[in-house]
Image (cartoon, rainbow, N blue to C red):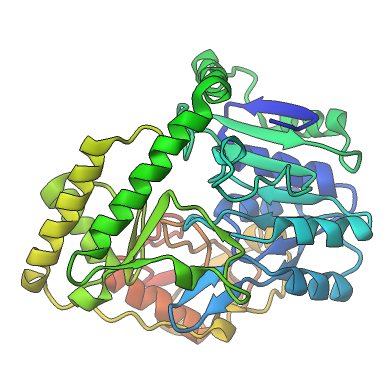
Length: 408
């Protein structure tokens, strides 16, 4: 796959990305992090005590959609925060949108800094030229992939790939050993190696079929009334650099329902699970495991949804914040806030307090509130109205968000 070193992990990319953070920035104490990272990265900040310097994603205010950080925003953040040990971004996002990794890697290397890419959704990228550029090919120093997401391994199978001389492989292995189980599951190892062998031998052909199938599905779904299949509007100078075509993103707002309602209906009525849902979208992810049969099941289920939508109750409104409302002030280290003396306060009284827990809509698993951030009223309104609309918050002490844990 082109890397100098590859490490298998049986504890998922959540552990792999924490290992990468320790190896890159553990001795420096600070790391530049995309604010759209997965909750596992925030957990890594809590465990390590690293101080984050944030680089914010690009927001599409019309679609209420966050794209990966641009090279310009990374450069500005590095000018502002020059004393970091490395940079960590997420690409692809759970929606399949991708950063300009090559340009960001060049910026980092010009300052002698390693670039870590959380590429959990990109295990398939090295095996076909019609997919977005793989992080190693784009010059990243270290990337983490989840075999069980867009690959074909068992849950918890993760690989981190390393190249260049900015990260010591022996130190990376030692950091992983700090966190990993001493009793790894051989079935997960075997599934990862089996998938690797399959992709080396047959990956291009398998992905040819998957890409053709995704194109056909996208065209068939675009013909359904009330469904808007997103593609071109997600790519551009102020949007994503590249887009994974195996992720099929549909806006259901013209059906006068929410993405939460759509996902719940598809699961309950057609036994179809969507990859991601939010206030106005659902996403289907197609892989080498799909064929004409599963594609037809998906299209038929969404066709039935378009007919049943008028019988669903009017969606509960979600109070969507502006991009500025999501850029909260970090006033304590995540570790210090998480381990501080805390209290649970009514959500009505939480604005202005320092959050002591993660509050993460799942999927896609990107926290809105982090330990150490000062809680903003608009972010709070978004989360509370989202819960009423069907948003799932698995990590706060009170998943209904009637109370929030804050620093005492």
